[in-house]
Image (tube, rainbow, N blue to C red):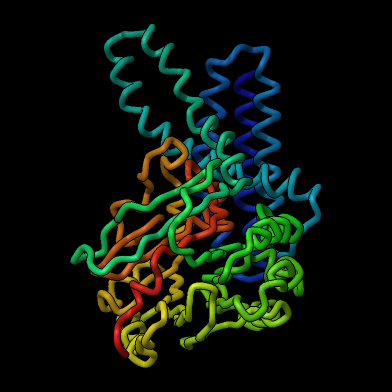
Length: 433
């Protein structure tokens, strides 16, 4: 029975890995067909291997249930990828029964392949030594990627409400480095002698299956109710599904209509393929788009200069240095920079900007933040992944993201619903023009 169940699942995997790309090629073209093939090629080998492993040692009474669960996940993943051929936002039943299970299956399959490869030499060594008892104990570790994927559904679906207190500085590290930041979850910070500037940052909302219109709208309404002084959106508004549903982004951003005159946005890398849709949504809700422009705004703590950098794929150093030179610091203003990709922060002359706000990294998306550790898969990369960084007197805050896109789950890195309290902004901005 085990052999027939494994053979049937492999046949279903073969049908999926061949059928979905062929359908995509015929209807949407080669580009998406290759994308779908790569996704399936990364996830299906691990899923097939994991199913075989579990059937080999699980009690026979669980075999049909296991086979059914793996078959459902495979069918959901294939259906989800096939639906993206004609991408649009789908109703809740489709998201809950197809898209989310399918994306969880893809993530679990990718994690399973890596994990089983890690265990393979350990298992081979124990078998060569004849340590059957240790091999039996090791079987339980097979479940690790499945447990992680299942647990990450919660991490992916929720945002963590926070107050983040950012203290500006007059000096700092000579290279871009992480610096301490105050985070308050489930408790209020101490009252300051001087009122801070309250900023609501929206980063990478990525309207799609994990964050449909009603969910994003509800979250934005809750954040706006916290009465920020400024609302700053740092790009990447849509997914393929969002792009395929004209008007959906404008509807989702409707709660920000209450912040007209104090809401500003920039474009991210995903926005350049659907700029008209993003512009229309921002305009409809009174959000000013800054494309290599500056805005001056009065706030309860004094005047603020906001410089909005467009996303560029090449020539980042020249682009950002020319932009800040074209819009120099204004006397008596707090100087903010909106910058989608935080890597570019290292090219900003130290001290030229008080605070830069970025997103793009989704906080690293895979990491150990849920366990109280700062480590993510980007920790040793060129990307500042999340939190506060310093470069001279300048500070960079990298938002973990209001949504996410790409790898189908957040693993150990929850999204962020924060209000930034910028401390002593006028003192930090008191430099001549």
